[in-house]
Amino acid sequence: MFTKSITASVLALSIAIVPAGRAAADAGDFVAGAIIGGIVGHAATKNHQRKRTATRTYSRPRLPSTQEGREIQASLNYFGFNAGTVDGQLGQRSRNAISSYQAYLGYPSTGQLSPFEQNLLISSYNRAQAGGYAVTQQVATNPDGTRGLLKTYRAELAGQTAAPVQGTTIVVAPQPTAPATTTTTTTVVAAAPAAPAPEAPAAGLPSFLGNGASPSLASHCNTVSLLTNTNGGFTTAAAMTDPYVALNEQFCLARTYAIATSEDMISKVQGFTPDQIAAQCKQFGPAMQPHVSALALKTQQEVVRDVAGFILTTGMSPAQLKGTAQICMGVGYRTDDMDVALGSALMLFAMGDHVYGELMGHHLAQGFGTSKRVDAARVWYAEGLKAVDSGAPAVFAPGQPERVELLRKASLSLGTSNSSVTPVQPLVQPASLPTFGVASD
Image (cartoon, rainbow, N blue to C red; front, side, top):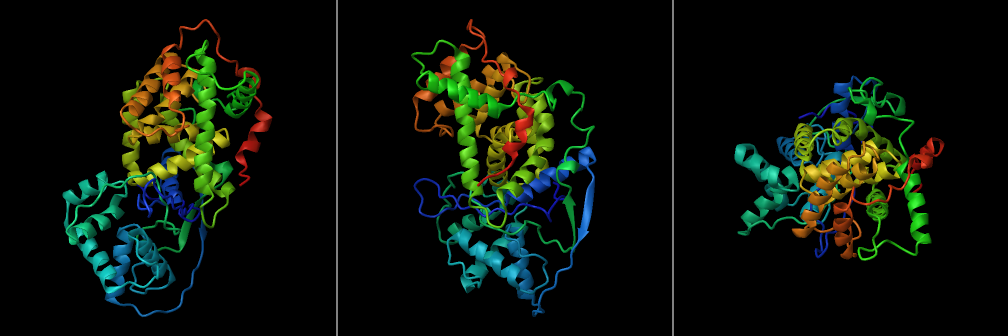
């Protein structure tokens, strides 16, 4: 587990998304910036990135320190509600953490604990501390991670069985997640110049990591959109004659949905601009780059195993990582950063969202962000379609059920059509790429 990183520049997200059919959002909490920071910190250690340290001095009013206050702060920190230093002084940060705790459980966010709320918080903390491996298993299987124990224990106190949590992501806490750590020195990863160290991207795989020669997916999709409009609309399964044309259209459609989902989540972020979020997500790319490179070199099982192993080193809950990946995937597509976009999709797939296998299929079929390998593309397409067939909700164009059959027919036809792939090399426009990195929201 690694948490050393960029907590001073970390992106604190506060997003509340209501899952379908629920009156209150309770699918879990995450602070994406802390996750990105943790992942980037891991990559920085491996790649020997240069860091600079800034020292800040904070002052706060003197408040009475009590043992009760320490218990409350330690409990809040354990469940991911950042109360700061465990000093027994219930200041503004502690009150904010209490408000987040109350909001998560559906209570009025007053910042003042009622006797029941305080008893539930502290007793849950004590129970989790004494639970050993059984608690570890509960946390690992709960979409809300450690925080989900609160709802489980509350349901048990009420004589109920905790209902499984549905939905994707909810961000509640706007504070950085630095669990119970006292420090006035914060580490900041240098912006663009300090991103990937020059030697790190090589890693013996230069053919997949070229910079200036990489085709622009954004430009490619602009051309695909023009052709689609010229042809009178999207290709249908019944009218399909060239699988590459159909898959090009569906690839760009999926890209559009990923960007829209990401921007909707970013619009709810408090205290940070879209540009700051994009800068954080850009740091996510180098950490996932080795796994992206492996797409064209290893089997699907090997790639997923490696990504799953990487996820375990983050020490983050599935709900936290999923929210981060959804945000950064859209940012990667919007900024034409395939390491970020494809790395995020890989992380979502490795955490069980196999519908995202479609994206790896598209990238391998068309050669964006990785070398083109039609045989590998078919495997990833098949896994994504299998997930939908098994009842997993579609994440791209969910209102178009016929899209599944189109993807199935087109992916099975790859390599058998006499038609050539829609050319992408003439669409390379390196000079225009930086425009995709500026958030205009």
